[in-house]
Image 1 (tube, chains in turn blue, brown):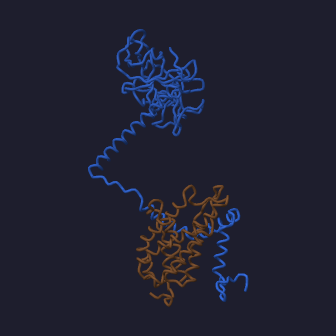
Image 2: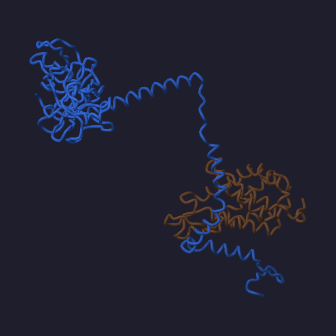
Image 3: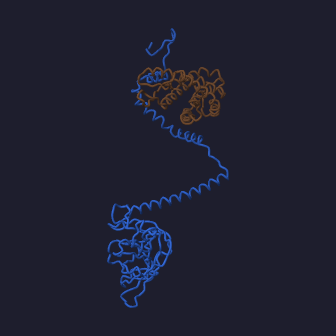
Length: 307
Length: 185
C-alpha cells in the first residue's frame, strides 16, 4: 500500500485524486504564516480582480443611480417666486460688488497716490453745491469741502475720471466757512496761460520730457482753450486727441486731461503756426460730484496733512 | 457544463455581490448571488465539475476579500472560502437527489444550508488562524456566535433572494449544456 493510500476497510483503500491533492494544498496554504502568504496573494488578488473591474464599475454606477437623492419638484408658483427671488438676489449681489469696488477705490485714494516721483496726493470727495459771482466779478462754483478737510487755494478739482475741471481759488475761513471752497473752471480766462501737450493717437499718458511731443501754451477762452503749435508739429494732431497739463507751475495737475482737440486751423497772422482749438471733456458747471487732489507734502503716505 | 458560460456567470455574480448587493443590505448582511449560482451548479453539474467549480469560486472570493494582519496591512488568505464552498457544494451534492432541481424555490431554499455549510469551515479555519499572532480574525472584537448568526442571516436573505435569482438562472439552463444523464429529476 502506497503512503498516500488511505485504508477505509480491510480490503478497500482510498487514493486521493487531483482534487483531493489541491484541496489539501489549499488547506496547508491557509495555515501558513501571514508573512509567507502576503507577498504573492496580494499580487494574485490584483490579477484576478482586474477582469472584474469593468463589471464592478457598471454595478457601482447602477447603484449610485438608484440611490441618488430624489429631485424636488416645485409648483409653478413656487418656481416663479424663486426666479424673482433669484433675480433680486443677483441685483443685490451686483450692487454689493459695485459697493466693494467703490470702497476699495476710495481706500486706495485715501491712502494716497504717488502721481509723480516725490509727489503724493490724496483724494477727497466733494459736491458742487452752487455757483455765485465772486467779488472779482467772475462766476465761481461753490463746493462743500473747505479748510477743515485740508483744502487750500490751488487745489485741483477733478472728475472721478481724472479730468481736470478747475482749481480752488478761495477757501472760506472760520465757522461754517471751513466747509466751503470756491472753484474756478480751467476754461476761465483768469486761469491764465499754462503749458499743455497733445497726446497723439495711441498715446495714453505723459512719460518724461519728450521734445517731439506737439504742445505749447494753452490760452483759456471761456468755453475752451486755444493753443498755437508749429505747422510741422500740427501734422501729427488729429481732432479727438486729448490735451494734458504739463505745466511745471501746476505740478499737482501734471498729466491731467483737460479736453480734446476739436479743430486745427491755420493762423492767419503766421503761416508757420497752426491754431488748435480744444474743448473741455467735462464742464464744472455740469458736474455734481467731484474730487479734490490734495497734495501730501509731509508725513508718511496716507496720513492727512492739514493746510 | 460549459466552462465559458460558468466563468461569465461567475464574474457577473461576484461583481454583483461586491459592488451592488450592498445596496439592499440589512443589518450588515446582504444576499449572495454567487452562493445561488453555486447551488445551481451543484444541482446540475457532474460531481467533480461542481467541486472544482466550488474550489475555484472559493479561491476567487478569498482573493477578492482582504483581511487584516496584526500590523494592520491588507492580507488575502486563500482557503477559508475555498474550503467552505467545497463543503457547501458537497452538502448540496448529497441533497440534490432529494429535491426538485428545476424548481426555483428548491434552488433558493438550498442556498440557506449551503451558506451555513460554507460558514462552518470558514469560521473554523479563521479560528485556527486566530491562534497565530500575525492574524486578526474577521469578527475581531465580537463573539464567534455573532459571526455564525451573520452567516445564518446571510443564508436566509440569500435564500429569499435565490428564489427569483434561481428562476433567472433556470431560464438560462439550456445554454449551460449540463450533462442530462446525471439528472434524475
